[in-house]
Image (cartoon, rainbow, N blue to C red; front, side):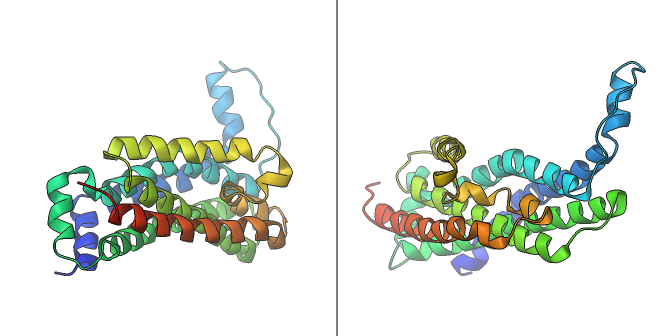
Length: 248
């Protein structure tokens, strides 16, 4: 069994793929539903008090999904990616794998690609669910804009997994890897408060699905897209270099 098939089998047998799909699809279903019936929900919790909320729009359902995916979904993503990419966290496992390949790149590449494919697949499936729910409950929206925005959101997730790979090459445990990566990913939106900087950061792509279904032109995400591609490549390069120089 080669390392590509081994990584896929490990992802399936540990049920991590089920966890990914469950989280993203659940929020894809819940987000638009909660937006559509928010007024009724608030009235029930308000003890019969009349509460008026703005008329929900289809884009609001997408926004609700993105908000949850960018928080809980991203946290689950980082945890699963760290479990796969921090293979040196257990020295015995690290030694076992390293002595069977010519380069550590042969270990990192299949793990990165398989985990990223699973994460992106789960995100897209959740986004499809959110699109369907939003259209059925609140009206139509541009499928083309939704698809392009989902693609940009997927690019951000690929970047996040690449950051995990780089950090895992230096960190001593899965937990430490998760904590550092979450800290980095939380720091980016804070740095991006300044518009001139924020438009260049990968975190700007998180809201691309919501933005594009609301009419934002794809060109607005060009700078963030180019920076994300460059940072993803740089993170993977660092992951290989640091892993090769690591002492077990």
